[in-house]
Image (cartoon, rainbow, N blue to C red):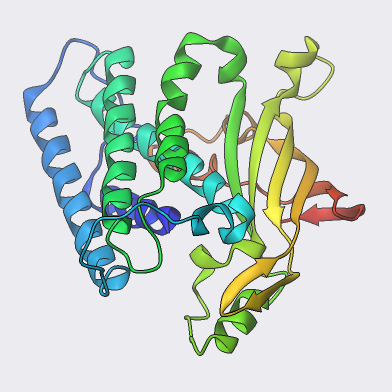
Length: 295
């Protein structure tokens, strides 16, 4: 759910702005740009909120309540990785906008983190009135941690050598099969709720950690986290299943495409850096398996 919200916001920002990864004005804050960024953020967030208000929260309960425990069972916590990555992505997106206004980098990162955390809080406040969910302190905590991740990276070279990514490929139809058993008919494009086919990754810069230049500077290694297709329904609730863990090669998209330097390319690389591209992969759990090019 958080991924769909952020992608909607990011798409609107992309369409309504020309500033993402544009040349940054280092002479000071440009008030006209601040106004443009502020209005674009307000428009994008407002449009995103209106969309999710109608699409997700049509049926609401009458009282505020905390999550009763469903949260730690749902998708075997793969959704927690989504909240964390969503926080990272939102924070980075907002920070880049503030940088373009001429704001100093550290200040822009802090503003981005606060805006990213605010999105997480807004979503949880809405979930607090949802009939089957509730306010989740875990979702809020991990989403906010993700929002402050770029700030932490700015203070630590070790953390700056780590990045988080997402991949999706329809390996299984289990999500749609289980939803059909619950008399639901989600869109065949509802990938954002299809957790069995999502994988979340943490990617590490091999050259930095191994202190060697023998490895191409664009080649990284990643550890993945996902959910297999063995869930089943128990009283209309998804139960069972196993978490999946992977080790894979990965790419630093900026170093791999370092010679592609155009305004459009910088925007494309900005978005691509959050997606895990196909690469040789080993699934280490629950069953060992090698994939020549896992998505």
